[in-house]
Length: 349
Image (cartoon, rainbow, N blue to C red; front, side):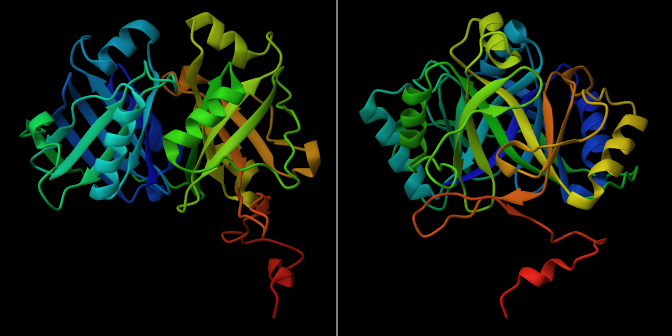
């Protein structure tokens, strides 16, 4: 199982595409696929699939307000609708049966004939509280074939040439963030859903994080081999924006934001580029995180300029594990160009 994409719902997919190409940079998009009339078991959508690293970004506009994404857009407006996980076909079928045996609400599987791909949804009404989509590339007949909705879909798809070149330093889409009320329960639910344990910071503690914007929260993360991760946040203070957003929408779980990692020595230059490009910067400059010796720069772009999505940016790092299975932070200097002390000084010879 791999975390594959973050999928956002927007009013105008073409306008949102222009925004996110300006944000990410066309040099950080390896391929752009335009989808017209992509149909599953409840609705038809149009939009784009951006192949970025390590997660893809899907920008989708529903036709009408009857399906999952249409109802979401009507009720909540633009924003993150779901994440998509990719599985081998055997694991895909086993996961579908596992969720059924748990009594979790899964959709009828849909088969996309033009791609030989199959998907099913773990519905928002499930214990995780947000929609999650599972997909596979079929290499043999689906065992649950009597339950499958077979679609010759989309009406059209094409690889689009990006004509306007927008060059940015390295920008990696890495993390969807889910905010929850019941942290202990949701941590176990997500561990069951993803068939993997949550990873804690080194030492096995969960010290509260202060984002210096009025939020104090604890977080668990679920790591994937492609260096992406899912983070589950629980805000401790009701007056912070995380808890206030949950209360405003009357929800116990929701997608809160998505996190991009940016090249460490280009963090301030990126911030200036985005401000010049017209994005609404929440912060006056990138902030240096001194909490728990974190040492990363971070900043946010306001959702008013990113089609309803809170976008968070953090200087590059990853979370490998030590021998005890605990996660610890390692800075990523792989794209750094300017330094006074060569990062290779830490390489063991």
